[in-house]
Image 1 (cartoon, rainbow, N blue to C red):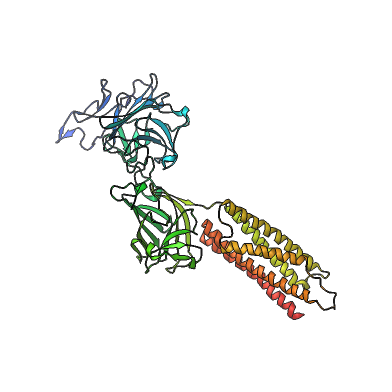
Image 2: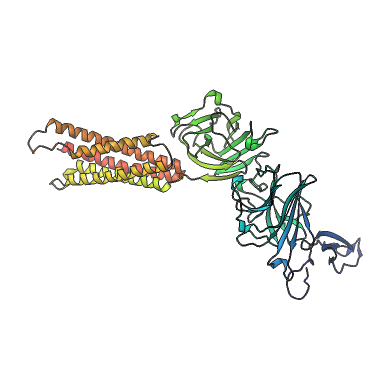
Amino acid sequence: AHGSDATLAYHGGSRSSFSLNLSGSGFVGGTATEPTENPVTNDEADGSVAVVQGNEQEQVGPDCTVNFCENDLASGLLQKYKINVPEGQNAANCEGCSITMELIFEGEAWLSIAFSEDGKMIGSEAVIGIPGSIPQKYMLGGYDVSVIQLMPEEQQTLTDASITTTNGQTIMKFTKLMSEPGEIEILFGDNEFLWAHGSDATLAYHGNNRAAFILDLAAVGVAIGEEGATNPTDPPVEVEDNRGNVPNAIQGLGGGQDCTVKFCENELTTGFLQKYRINVPDGQDPETCDGCTIDMELIYDGEAWVSIGFSLNGRMIGSEAVIGIPGSTTLKYNLNGYTDNLVQPMPQEQQTLTDASTVFQNGQTIMKFTKIMKEPGEVEILFGDNDFLWAHGSAPALTYHASRSAFVLNLSSGAAQEVTAPNKGLWLAHGVILFLAWGVFVPFAVQASLLRKLLPEGGIWFQIHRGLNTISLALFIAGFAISVATTNKEEQPHFSNPHRRMGLAMFIMAILQVIGGIVRPHNPPEGEKKKPVRVGWEVGHRVLGVSLLACGFWQMYEGILLYGVKYSTDESDEEAITIAYWVWISVMIAVMVLGGAFFKFRN
């Protein structure tokens, strides 16, 4: 490159790249030749740049500030563009520079060119042209057409914008400012662009008609990729997209990878891989497909049962799953609860999987199957966002899972995102409050009664017993209220599982226990025989108290398991909490049983 004077500034058209072989430069067949003195020339007539190799000139591309440059995006889709530099400005640091662009498509369809900061669709901006309307600027908020939103009116700054269908071609033209406040800047250098077009003039899913590419506007009409430059007429360089963990072409209006052509991959967790491909019959559209199926593989590093679940809400209960057990038939199941006996195979007429198998080989458990995406009475698998669940065991036998999680997978793009259930803080508060009530204050209250001989005389044991039970009741009411309010917030049915029903039963029993304590028959003076009503009350009070305490211990353990399932807690953390819980409860039980027995037999 060279400038037009001695000040370092934009070089205009006076620049190019060229290859020079230093092992042969200036020599042909051992005979010296005169080296070229001026390898780069600037053709003032048409703005093109020539490179001299040996003694011949070869034109490699036009100057895109003088003439339109061309880029063949795909078969039947051509991009033309020219950078408009105001007088007195240079393109490299230009204020007011604009780009005039044309997209020419062989056929009638909507067209789009998008501007991105990372080569991904979501968060990018696009100019979309629909035949019969004026091309406008859009925000690409997601993969569905409903989240492709027009920019506000004050940002609709395109000029000379039009889209027409002429002689079997759809031609979109517009001029856009390269630098606009609050928008992605088009650089006089490398730019990440995305293109897409539809199959007709209605804005809808683009299918396979999209890709991402890098275009260097400072080069002589050259689209470049990671390895360097390509000819402007070559197909654009595909950019790696890590969504779904599969390198593929980044999609335009609605996709990350085409999972109808080849298997897409999604790493569910370390050592657990999901692979899938959608099978679309000829003449069908995947979005409204009748008879579409999905091929799926789960590959687990180890020997264990594996499962993929299909859900309407990201929760296990009420979902459906395909479960594979090495050495057994791979089947469809209804997930009716958290225990093994509530995970039941579907009826025989619903066992419609094909090519289904689960094998253990080379240290891996591999489950494969093909499933119809839309089946009567079952959760539909959509060509869009799906709530999926995965799980695996620690051994081949189907028992409580070793690991599990929920995630959303968009089958039109391969984009996967792990799902975190809401209201984690509220349920954690519920658990902590009720542990204090039933794991701390109630056991201490019982111990105050059983070990009263260790306390000063004068009825102080009763004051401690009553005070601790009062605190535990207040905490129980607070924890119960949090549970009811949070369940209502999540729009879930109340008292719909054993844990919730047991909680309601305990709440009623605890209120009766307190009322019984308030209206209890008084103890007779020392030396007098207790009346039958007092004896009956004492027996009932103790039986109900022991029952409540046992239910409380079970409830707290069940709550730890439910919390772990709901929020996919780390297995080691859950195990540590469970061990710590049972150690504490064992100490409480030992003090009550051994201490109570000691003083009973001593008396």
